[in-house]
Amino acid sequence: MIYYISDTHFKDQKIFDKCSRPFASLDEMEKTVVEKWNKKVKNGDTVYVLGDIGKDDDPSTILIFSRLNGLKHLLVGNHDHEMLEEIKKSGMFESVKFIDLIEDSGFEVCLCHYPLMDWMEFNRSGLLVYGHIHNKTEKNGPAYKQIKDYYKNLPAYNCGVDVIDFEPKTLEELINLKKEKENEPYIH
Image (cartoon, rainbow, N blue to C red; front, side):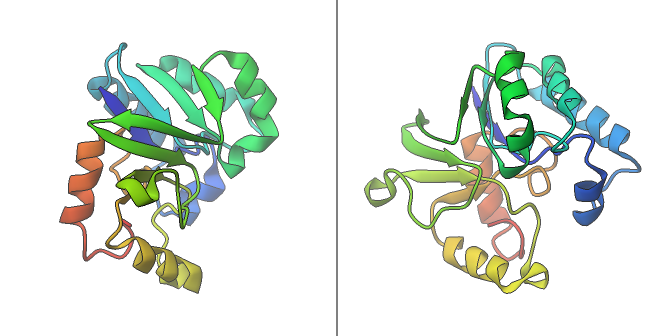
């Protein structure tokens, strides 16, 4: 099974507060994510982590991934740059890339931390899975409305924890979630 998740931002109080994460503390969020992840993901499963794993300047967040099931692949996010060398040296991830193209459920899926206007296989029914924008809406700035409007009817799926209930999701789950939440301002 293949799963996707992004923007865990472990140990990052600033992001925790900014996104109004529904937990009493960072520790509670970490505990919940670990429990949900390990309940769902088996050791032979693959998990694509689409960036921003933890607080920029806290390499200890990398160790949290040793407690998470599955073969993990990292697509680097903007908050991963400061500790990129530590991430690579840690051995926590099977691969560390900035963009990737994989096959999942018969689809070519482009993976990138950032939402893209055009992606690999875009013109050949390819899908995009991305993160970065969390649960931001136009109240966070006009660019977010533009992104949401652009993606509304495109095969592009936000896998940020803030919109996927803080657990890895399959491609099918991401597709269904976008359909179910099509009128909510933050899902796409």
